[in-house]
Image 1 (cartoon, rainbow, N blue to C red):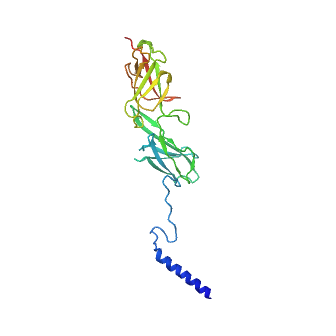
Image 2 (cartoon, one colour):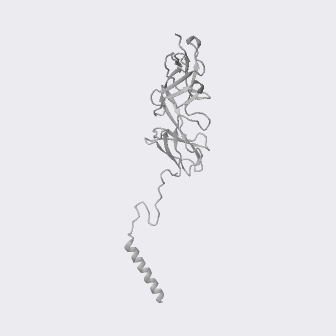
Image 3 (spheres, rainbow, N blue to C red):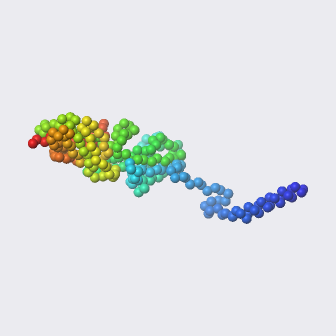
Length: 260
């Protein structure tokens, strides 16, 4: 009996101590007493039935207006799309599709450049499929140079062909050096830098953009004039980006030694 009384006294003292050091809290209006509030997802963490992420260019700047989609791997033609905001972020809601569907991430950006319309395809950082119920974070980078996973190029291949003999004399192979100077921003809006190439390096991949191209004879044989498709020969040429089946984007000029 004595031991029981002492135990009750100790419990009472501990309770009084807790009451004096721990203030009582009232659950928020949206939270029922005795429940735990839902945890907020950590930044960059996956949320059920959402695909989220950010799209940036090659320099890490966010891209606005990029179309980002989730491609359904189980139902052909069932794609869900959204667009990025000014910070390059997107949040794609997949909750209206069946719970067992799986998805892969895709993106594209249509730009007007150099008098034409071009579709660019930012590369996803994780191409693995994911279940809609799990959600996923998929970030994209718009690349305009370098090798693609499929063995192609993100950039444009620069070519230089010999012109027709009636336009002038043919430069000797290996005797030509080209300088490509960006004629304004590149296709992703970034600033490029001049590129020097020897004829023996062609075709050579350069970042997609518009360039003023000049050429010189390494041996000093004389001036070399260039012509873009549809243009005329002169000391410089500004070729337009063109899509070539089986190759991808290309830039091309013809070259001759002008007749004196």
